[in-house]
Length: 307
Ligand code: SF4
Image 1 (tube, helix red, strand yellow):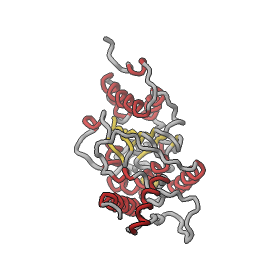
Image 2: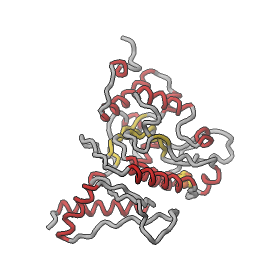
Image 3: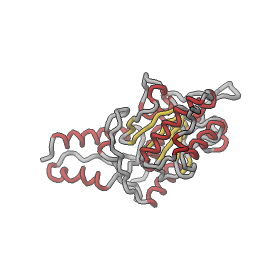
């Protein structure tokens, strides 16, 4: 017989999958050992099996199952409530077949590129800004939404704030090709009647677009994520009364993945003080430590006031 704890975990997993399905997620990568762990007791006690999510409305309908559709349910830990303190355990990365991962990523990208779920944004955008970098990256940066430069170039973080983010990434010892960068929203928020400026995405826009990012995260399976700014934090873990200033510097948990909140690079551009730069850099040092990356004494000392 399955234990009560197992049944609770299974029920939570099913609820999580149904919630993803309701949000339009049609693809969830699954670790083989997680699947085995779910199936084994089921064979002896016959509880309900988690259902395979059905395709979202804007996915081309097909009566046959998609051949390359990866199996999925992240580790059982992924059903932990968002924003709970992170466990002191690095989540294991499931072994996704690289070919299947690339195919699924491209299928997702193609789906996003023609998305019109937000009619006003679809009408006003130059292009969808899907994301950039290595789909197998261990580190994922998440920002708010494309600005004017990103909308024109089709790549996140290419404007002034993006150039600063690139400097941060390089100072950490990475290139943009080695990590992945995406936004909560894939289209530039429209600003009717304005010729310039950006606006914050609405909660409804974020809720509409987030399934794309969730699918990206499920495919990338980063070991560590960084949320850049309050909107990125809100998009990932929900609205919180606690601001970035108090959240930053401590780990959050995003479905089993350690999530470091920090200031948006645009905030650093507006606040050029050394102490704010140091705070962000201390967050990045925590990220490097979490990834097990070597940190040089020079890196440790960045933005410290001279003694
Ligand atoms: S913001 Fe996201 S959901 Fe809305 S139209 Fe763009 S890609 Fe689609």
